[in-house]
Image (cartoon, rainbow, N blue to C red; front, side, top):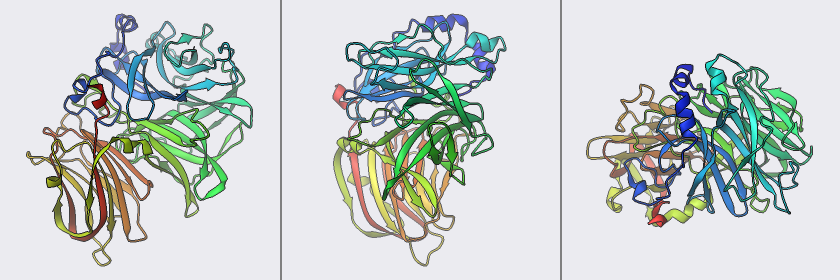
Length: 529
C-alpha cells in the first residue's frame, strides 16, 4: 500500500471516512456496454467504477480464483481503503462481488493476503469446512493525523462461504505496531517443513518474518533487507515462495518479492526480487545484483496466488498496472487502474545467476478469436500490417521472432502502433545499446504528469542472433515479454484517438522477421451481454 502524503490524508475528512463505510460496492450492471469507455481494458481486470490499486488476498479455493484489491468506491482517487472482490474460474473472465472488507474503528483496510486454513489451525472452520482467512493491515488515520507512529497493525477476518461474507476477528489487531509508521502488507503462507505460518511483512526499508501456529498469535523470527537491494523508496507488498529451478528438477530456491516506491529502474514504483534460501526462520540472499521483475513504468504491488493445487503447480502473479507518479491523474473516466494479466513465474539459472522469468498464463489462449500468420520477410524501413485487421484493432496478441543482422550493428527495430492524428507507440530492441524499449513520447495524452512521457528501457545484451517478442496490447496498455520471459515491460498509454494502424519497422539497417503470429482477442466482458 502506497505511502500517501500527510497533506493528502489530512484532506480526507472523518465524515468521508464513515460515509464510505456505507458504500454498497460495485454496481451489478456488469455489461459489455459498461466496459466500453475510452481507455477501458478489454482483456485486463478493472473495477466497474471507483479507484483501485494493489491486488490483495489472491487465493484459489474450490475452483475459484479470488482477486481482492485496494478499493475506494466513492471516488476515482485514493481514499478510505476497502477490499474490493472479484472471482474467476479461468483467470481471464472476472465476476464482480460485493465489497469484502470495509474500514472500521481500527482503521482503513490496507494491503494483505488470504489463505485457506485447511487444518483449522485458527479454529474458525466449522463442520469440516475450512475457513478462508484474510490477513491485512489496519491503518489508523486518526492516529496519523495526531502525529502518532504506531499507526499500522495487522488484523484478520474469516469466511466460511467461499469469500462471499466476512467476519472480522473480535480481538484484532493480532500483531501490533512496534512504533514504526510503515508496518504493513502481510503476505502469509504455510511452511510445511517448519509446520507453521510465515508472515512476510514490509517494515520501512526492510522486511520482517513472523511465525504463528494459529494465525492469531505472532512471533518475530528475523529481518532482511537493510542496505541490500534497491532503496530509493519505502519497501511494500512483499511475497515469499519457493520455485524449482527450470531444467534442474531436484533444485529449488526461495524467491522474495519486494515492491518499492519510488526507486524503480525507470522512475516511480516497481517490483524487485531476491533469490536465496529460507529455513523457516531467516532468508539468506544469493542475489548479487538488483533484479527487477518488470522494467516497465506500470507494474507495481506484484504478489502471487496462494493455495494453487499441487496438480497445477504453477506460481501465478498479478500486479497493479499503474505508477504512483501519476496513478491518480490518468485520463480515464468513472474508474482508475487495471491489473496486469496473470503471469506464470519460473526460475532459471544462467551465467551463475538466478533469474525470475514470466509469461502470460496459458489461459490467455481462450480469448483468441482469429489468427494471422506472418511470413518470413526482410524488413526495410516499414512493413504495414493493419490491412489484415478489422477495426477496432485492439486488443491483440503478437508473437514475433527476428534474426539480428550480422553486419548492421546499429539496427533498431520493433512494432509501431499509430493513428490518424500522427500519434504512435514504439516497442522495440536497439541492438547497439542492447536495450528493449517502449517509447510513448508521442503516444497521445500525457500532459497530466511530467513523469509520464519518455523512452523506458530494459537492458539485455543478446549474445546470439535471435530475438523474440510476445506482446499483449489492450486499449490503453502493452505488456512485452521477450527472450522467453527474461524481459518483462508493462506500460499504459492514452492516445486521443484509438490506435488503428500497426506496422513493423527497422531503422539504421534491415532486420529479418523469421515468423509471426497475431491473434485478435475477444473482450473478457463480451459474455456479459
